Length: 98
Image 1 (cartoon, one colour):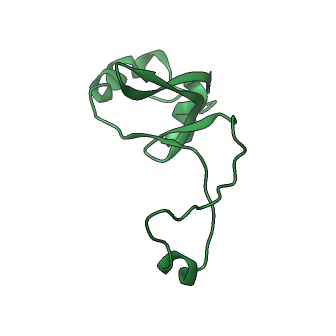
Image 2 (tube, rainbow, N blue to C red; image 1 turned 60 degrees about the vertical axis):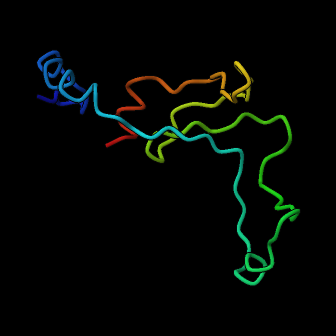
């Protein structure tokens, strides 16, 4: 049940429990760029593609393609990880996933 402000009311707690175990895809994005197909076809081993981010800028953390946080790369037990540095509020994340 939704309240008139568009948020979730107390009655929704039971409905929310039903979806808490649904898996989602988390991805980290270090940057983007647009290139012509001609340049794409010329890429090979050793090619460098310049992205739209500066070195040291935080990465975007996306859930199913929706931005939920920013973070920095860390190494944990010889595997890459991400330390979240700025997380969007839970209410705002729910709004963005709709």
